[in-house]
Length: 490
Image (cartoon, rainbow, N blue to C red; front, side, top):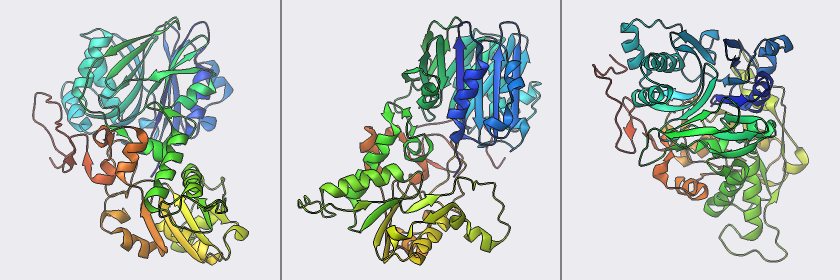
């Protein structure tokens, strides 16, 4: 899996927006590493700089100097829909009779092709195959006939899928969250203005204060003088569909997403993992970095009760938490591995075991997920080669059995090891002594919500959106665009 995108928007009084946006994008870099961009507006004209690469590669000092204006938006991208090239890099900019638009999108539409075909027939020319441009063209068209709030509502009534948007319409910055809140978006207060961001960590970076999450179906308009924001509840649904994987993997541990600190959620999920499938071993260790909070919570719970749920004796400390794997942070996904042997060696390039922690001991290793199973297989072998007597694997999420259509670049069903294998078959494949996943019930309990209010499509195969060929977990249909509904095989 690869990260989703990150979006940000600021409206400041008497200060240029470019540098705060630049810092905020650094805070969201974990959500996308393919491209980075900023669009600002100085009250007279729009300025844009969008490049491929990391934030530090995409911008130089001179680039920030020419991005004038106290209002602007930014974006870091990992491709979820559209090509991996500059044509789909964001923010996407468009000029039209009613002004200029810059638009940053985190998520994925499932009816983008239908809307693109309709708009193309009306004369709209598209420069990319991404769904962000579809939203921009649709909104621009509606702005020719309606004010900003009504135009946004009309577009929201037409698009179907997951989205968190930051939009710069001339020098007005707005944020929009899809009606079920699948993608995160929050509001922050700064000393001289307000901001919107995918995660609160970006607000912290600018010494701001988290105000609250943008509500599902809400439009937030930042006031141009930086004095506040206006809120419009445009669409409402009976249930939400928050992506549970934000708390399991994607969001930074220090972010607050939907009123929950991600780090504490992961620790609590680790505690539930011990309650549901704890195993008495000498040590428990995380797969860095995503498994660390799970393992910490797991070890804490193990210090209080046995695997059978009984209280520990006073002289029994439970399972020791240990850092048994060190991560090489200079090996990224762009590392070239042309042969199968080198691909299989990749885990040894990224992770190095601490022999004294592992040799002659029984080990529980905790990770956030198993996707294809290749890395888990290599990891178990690495620990056994290092002298582990037993290797037990615990996963802080349910089995991933289906792809994600809402903005995560996830493997196909054919590539997902859990799509056609039982847990015991997966255990045999990765050669672990035992394997257990966290239940969906535990996820809902820890996040303090009902299962129906979470998006669990990748672990249940039932989705909160109307996706061709897939089951839904609720009564939902695509918007009627007034013409023939096109399907993927048309």
